[in-house]
Length: 439
Image (cartoon, rainbow, N blue to C red; front, side, top):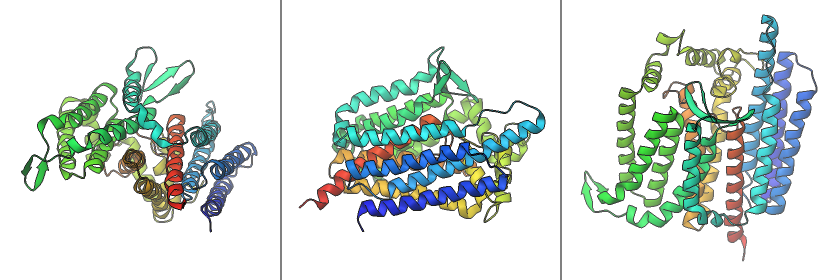
């Protein structure tokens, strides 16, 4: 079976599962309107056109990546629609104004994301073109990270200054920054990997680099602390620093960088806990959420109750009460999934993310150029680390951070950037596999 035929069958299975989930949720909720069904069919059409575009422009691309991402995206749309209906019903019972549904806008963002992934395949014929923009990506990434701090356009939401508002529209520039910084880190580490891998002193069976080689890790640490201080964005700070440390280890193969990264992380966390109230309260809620059940801990407590009521197999799509959790469409969509799909369903969703990470790392190993290897690894590390941070926060493994779940959560910025990442990975896998099959 050819790769594209395998992709077609897997995509058909993903669309079938997504369609069945949509029908089941609507049946349990007693919804029969045709508007959302038509919008979901547009997403199905977009997925099919994306597959056809891969056949035309990247015939040797990885066959598993697209169906996995489409399935996650469809499940997210189904849950967002289910929460829209619940919110409208609750508003009607209370005699309040019915809020605007998120499903329509999320559908539009999904179609835009698929279009951007196709545009990447058409316009970027070689991923090595991105290496030319190593330092341009650094400037762009830093500018995007700092943009929410600008007066007038910068907006604070739920205590974190992450958003930029232009007129009636807003977006989260940090989501775009993670792609730009992944390009910069990959290009920078290709140039500096020899000096960073150099061992001068051995202490405790670990090789330690020269003091002057510590500059990059210290700069990235200071920048992540600055993000935490000025934007109060614990999630992006952790994501940014974690991505750099993992790529630094991959580029050099030296465990020393992991140890240094861990030490700096502990130091930064301790300083932030002592200096900033918003960090301290998040740690306190993490340690004992039920002590704050009526105030700042209400969200995580309701999430834990929802996961507990879901049990092993869940209440069924459309049959639970996930809308009780604040921000269930964005920050806590995994809690909503866990309540209605149960531990088994949530484990399956986590496995889908594991598949994406595995395919991305496989692509990184098959690409022959060092820049491509680090870029593919960096992009999937971003997705995997972001998923871990979100899942850890929802299940109380780590403190809450406020990141969104890739492909599942409501939010246009995240969805568009993640689809762009998929397009780049598909282009890279096509190049790697084409080299291998060419005689």
